[in-house]
Amino acid sequence: MRVRFGACNHPRDFWLRCRPEDGDVNSCWLWRQAVHKNGYGVVRFRGRVEFAHRVAWKLRRGDIPAGGRVRHLCGLILCCNPAHLRLDLGVTREDRREIAKLAKIKGMTQSIIAESFGISVSAVQKAVRRARRMRQEQQAT
Ligand SMILES: [Zn+2]
Image (tube, rainbow, N blue to C red; front, side, top):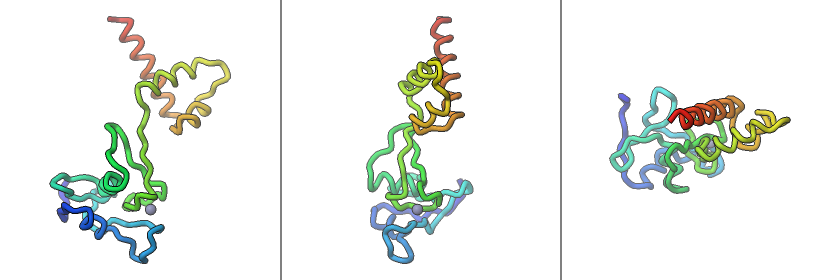
């Protein structure tokens, strides 16, 4: 990443860089400093380079578990308003097992599974494939 970062160490410094222009706390809080080429805001916060929306999540909502992704409900990836962010934990190992089991049930479609797990159909297919591969590997050993 070759971007200029405005380092900040205090939460106050962070929030000053994305405060809403109209002063409305419900609107999008667009990040106004360094932007990565992928379009996300970046910041050096307490010595670590991170995506701005993830720092926003951590400051307001707490730690992000490994593999967790912070997604934008508003669709504006520069937005740092914690109310517009959602934590996506992805598909865990337990989820994968459950998905593989469900997929074997007659009448259970991938779109129903996708809906109930809040993931895409392609994520369901990937989970099923991965579960099958893991089973084969276990049988091989
Ligand atoms: Zn927003």
